[in-house]
Length: 80
Picture 1: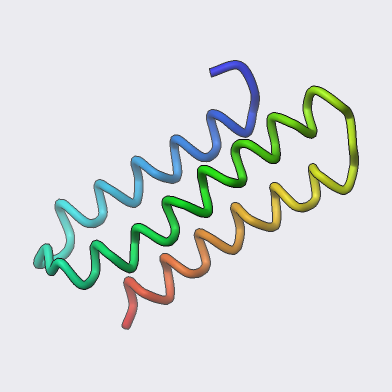
Picture 2: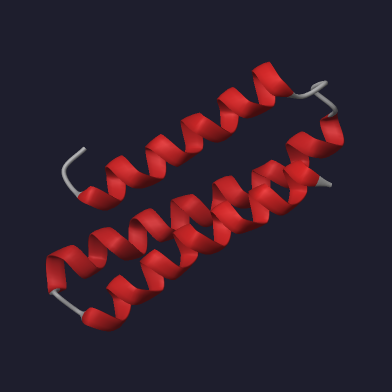
């Protein structure tokens, strides 16, 4: 875990898994909806790592937006 994006995305992913395991009734439909957030976190991590290597500000903004979007989507799915 070399970058802040690694730490952020893995932490949020583990929180999402913990929420699913301990605070839900473990419906498969909910798991498939959370899978979309997990894919967004993977993409955000890759974009963030690219931004860290190259220093591109736009890529940093996209990575942060993807992380926030993935968390927001997971929150909306969890509350519905």
